[in-house]
Image (cartoon, rainbow, N blue to C red; front, side):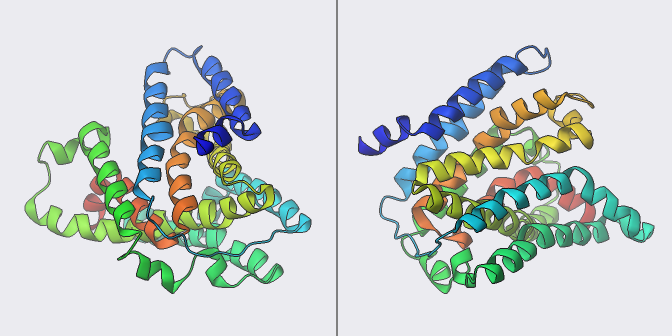
Length: 316
């Protein structure tokens, strides 16, 4: 009951609820946007899965990460997030213009080019700027041997529970898993594609996103505001809003049902109602475990079926 009371009285949680309701109202004007699907997303990823994460970590032993952000560090943090948002809107395609065109034309080479870009802006630069600038060791960014050991101990239940939950959700309800459900993959493609795709996603999605948004960003927000709830809420909002420029400037909204040129307001509203909600689940697991490696595995499981078709097409 104390945890629930802290949640519903947290000012940032209340702000997030207001923003969510306002965003739903904005998007309700678009005929192609489904409010019922957005509410289902809220129920599953904003309530059910976070509750599952909390229950699955009751006996988990959180790892020790010591972060004591200064005012200067907390000024640098939003500045970097803003710069990252600008990069996500314009950077990847600008870099492609300077690369050999045969690299861009090759799907296999582009796989590694994309990974290199992500490792640079999501991991290398934060480690250099904040790690060296404020003298944090790697263990305070989540790189701990204890994390690997706990995967076989108190963190194993949440890894298994959360991974099975997201795999089941994507298999039975996810549209991207339709080829798998319909048996369009050969036995060889499944035997080779699933494990190799999973390993790839552990780095390309798991390490990249969980390091930046949880180990790096959420940890500092929680420490600065002295509230794990605030850390989860703000991290989720930032995670969603960081994608908003891409919907407007890179025409990414067409893939999300927003049209090729959504307004800035629509892009922000969609980022809050859909993308921000998906960050809550992983945020709760990070709060309860502080285990970067556990989150890498769970994130890879969450992205496995949606990415399997493209992986098989390119590599097999």
